[in-house]
Length: 459
Ligand SMILES: Cc1cc2nc3c(=O)[nH]c(=O)nc-3n(C[C@H](O)[C@H](O)[C@H](O)COP(=O)(O)OP(=O)(O)OC[C@H]3O[C@@H](n4cnc5c(N)ncnc54)[C@H](O)[C@@H]3O)c2cc1C
Image (cartoon, rainbow, N blue to C red; front, side, top):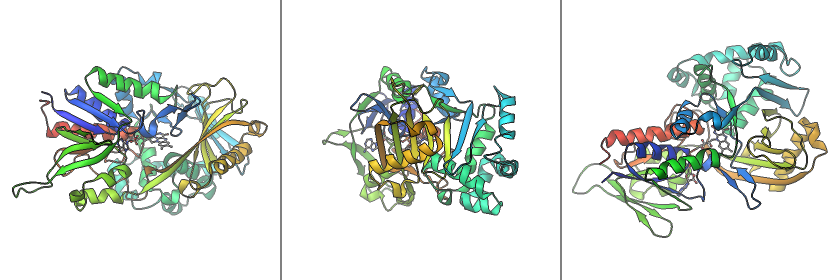
């Protein structure tokens, strides 16, 4: 009989782990608390039948493991994403806006002229002041961690005499947009790993958007792949209790797990148990006898950030492109009109916004948040001033990402716990990427490798 693994959490990390175990001949069961797969990267249909996403997601060419995962389930990544030619910067305080070509391979001349141009937005000196900041991104990963994980982006910027205008027009919206955190709460190491991964994966380091809902493009094909190979996937089923058996007969160690208790009283038994839940969902489920152990105690110390997504449907077309737009001096710091590729609509623009910092804003009403987003959007997109919002969705996630404070990325736990048959998977476990889809895939892969390292035979 094959070895059995039960995985709680059907996000990218849990599903990647499941895929690799199934490939190795294991019998795998995945239980996911939501009615659909995909977790924080998921998309789902609301009561009107419209697609809604947990939040605006971009895909980076440097996501090598994510691309391999998609290819390995027979879904070429180029069918999932489209590569962006341009990135747009705007500022609610004006003046002007800038459009940078970001595809130096396909259009090198346009890229160069866009960098040399756009001087109303960032002057030549502003741009030159950015150059020395790219240099640390060239350092090896461990050297980056050693030198930069003890300071925030703001500390680092100040020491390097960074320009205040560049901070507000580019760095702050970037920090808010990618990790929902202010640069004052953002490790310079985490920030520079973005540059590091882009630089080390040239020439594929491009930005991409999704060609459709991630549910149909990624999660349904992943589920199909797993089921065709014997895996059981149960959605709408929550892990409620992690059942632990202490070491017996005077043996050293923390004992082992003996089951996953599900909502409704059902119990699942397996040889190996994987928690692929976000760390904030896992912490309250850690069995009492394990809580004092330093490995498990440290999980509760990982800082967590909230996130807010606002999605607006307009009665007319207000944006005529699908670029990602970073907006300075605004809490609606990133947006993308998704009505062409991702979620075609019969009428008008459908725009997805990240609203950050969410720490305070999460306590505002949905109406106030929509009004706040609209006010900012209308300042930078004149066509939106005459348009009406025909539908809005506000998703507030009080806990949605490990906050990238100095030291937090380095403190992420290993996938193998001190309990021999208990493993962790997630973007918040130790792996070289920031909290991201790639980080989740890498966390899931590292988890499967840890399991297969400890149990080399599938029988
Ligand atoms: C608003 C937003 C925008 C983002 N933008 C980007 C982006 O542009 N690019 C990028 O690369 N990344 C982005 N990310 C990050 C990315 O979505 C995550 O890093 C990634 O999806 C995490 O995957 P995971 O499997 O580690 O965790 P999750 O996706 O959180 O999966 C964990 C799963 O466990 C389930 N679960 C929780 N508790 C239980 C329980 N008790 N029982 C059973 N199941 C349970 C959850 O429902 C969830 O499905 C964004 C995230 C958010 C929130």
